[in-house]
Length: 115
Image 1 (cartoon, one colour):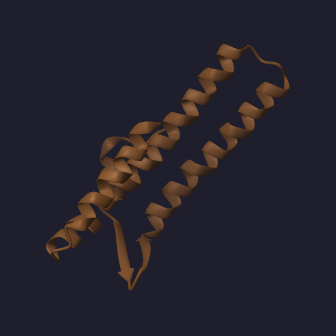
Image 2 (cartoon, one colour; image 1 turned 45 degrees about the vertical axis):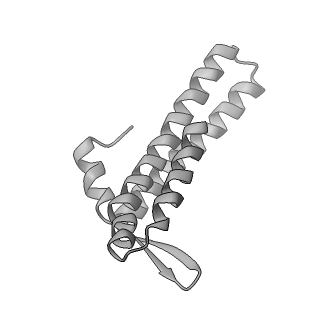
């Protein structure tokens, strides 16, 4: 079950990252955290379900379809985090003159696209 686009935008705009020295942290509102945790709990359940399908010798194509759905759900979580990061953290760092953040984001996107 996914949120409609409007709800995702509301959640994304609520994200924020901070840097304290070399330590980086995210600070998300309770609404954002709850949304992400709910999604991850569902994904965790999907993973357990896939394990059960394998243990029951379920037809391979059916298992693969469940794996695909789980990957899509994880991509959705990553999308929410990436959009929030870009709209807040990256913009703020660029405004502060820290253009190294662009390289960081490009590496992150490359990692996501490998999958």
